[in-house]
Length: 386
Ligand code: PLP
Image (cartoon, rainbow, N blue to C red; front, side, top):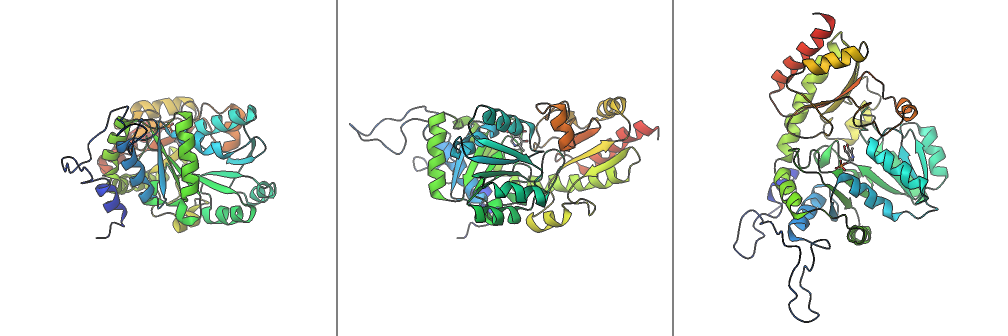
């Protein structure tokens, strides 16, 4: 029987794999250690940092969803990013985007500062900057598309084609879209990472990550490093994440439907100056997004007219959006990137990335879309006295 669609893979991952009691849902293995079958006779598992049955089912399911071969589940999304960087030596060049997640940026800058690799920060939507970057023959290019928080779109097929010509590996942070909306490995990337903390788990009760490779060889190398560094994910987090994955497809559908309603509302409201979402034909990455994505995603950002007083008033007026970092949970969140998610970037880096003081970001949840829209409308109306 075929198990090729994302819905079937996500729902069926590990189902009926229990050979002890035929439990339909795979049981959780919390044991830290496993008995040897005899002297010098190791079984399939020996110690949970190296391998764990619950974690392995999750890794395999996520690898299948991304059409990769190996999924390495890590303790956090940041750990998955750090893991990918293990392929670099001190003379290797890493190219990163100027507007990625603030924590990724902090990791890149600080490891480069310590001499772990050479680093070049560029605007990956600018072909001239890409030309320069690839001329330096990088070992790895890091891509985050859509970017956080401004939803800039990078042309993955173009980057992968350039990378092939210079023997550069391509790693894509696919946290914002999930394999439901984008599968970078099918476009030529070598590595995909997720903060599974976000949509993959989807319930804001786990912090975890995954790194998925296109080849077995790269997968084996990085699995070795994950164990060596001690950054593999816990069995309990893996169990919860697998539970979340089962509803990934319908959740993403509802997230996007609600987000589309808010994009329309925000685009027409006088209290908003700019809306950043790739579904808008005016968005510079709209055509590329249409081509490389299956859906525009549910994250969106926008700028309010006015200054800090309006930002504060807007946040306080919202009733169905929690003021919090993170994203991708079933509940809606509002965030002020400059003082929250991207506070790790200094003022100069924020300005360069286009993150201003009036910028707001929504992680649109799966509550009733009309009620979310009513809530945003009343909060915006309160800014203009409507
Ligand atoms: N990548 C993106 C796009 C993120 O938004 C985040 C966190 O917000 C991360 C990676 C880091 O993930 P974690 O917080 O699970 O370490």
